Length: 433
Image (cartoon, rainbow, N blue to C red; front, side, top):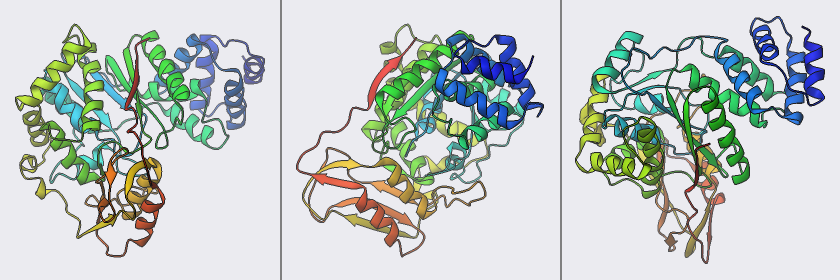
């Protein structure tokens, strides 16, 4: 088998066999196939696409390129959730205890974030004492005992994907549906869950800017998951404006606590129910999505979800009293109000640019080596469709430095006020097959 023949085959729109795909991924992982040949193949895939069978084979070849997490010692259906990214995406902090409160095992590996704010692990480390570095045996025991644990990503998961993603990034082949879908799904499948719920974002703050592209990606990932034996569903959700009101690590933990108490932002609550009901349904705990949502609402109403969050924090070394006393979370020294300069209705909040404003404060990482300030960030006091008068606060800046003029300028440049506007639809649809 020669790589040049396989490049030519895909260039001409022909289908690669399972054996050929594994040959390519194994050879590339072992440095036996050079970057320039895999670059050529990626460009051929970009233009010629892949069949559903090829996409599934590519995904599993990348899964088998490294470690696979074995969660078989955990009783029950393990359900994972993945978001394709966004600004103020606090859903994992809410969903993990919410779903675990229904005796569904949530054994989740999360990362640290590059970009606007930290990842889920960074956010949780806003809680004094919380640690995510726990051994596999303890991880399994915690999930079996209390149905929830979130740990940092470790081990040698999908090394082929890491190599291929870095190559795609510098060869203009990132925006390829089969390559994006197999990249995301390989990591989720290697993490060991039985079922996967996907939150596919669309809009200014998302990777997929249009509904059509988001739908195509969602269908591709759901089909890959189902084709390789993982029950998979997806929600397509809006990211034209930040989700919820908080952008920043400790601020988002406080917002998650509010949401678990039933007093969080309505859009965050709505999305958590949309994703959570799929997780409950796939775990075989409800006979319909409607029944699943009723179950989720009940554990918020009766306090079980909030108590599960406290239990989770305590189990991983954190101080659970922050749930009742969120003022114990890191607090920024300065609070600076960004005031409206005109009357009207908020018509646009450009999600990615507002996220960048939070990153300028220190809420996120520019590079892997960057240090995050867990206390800083932004609180949105107005969302799209809200009326506003001159002098009302649009945004509260939480900062540990007094001079934030560049942050204020960026906020003003990316919040537009008009005579009228309607809030955007949050959930555009559900993808089952």
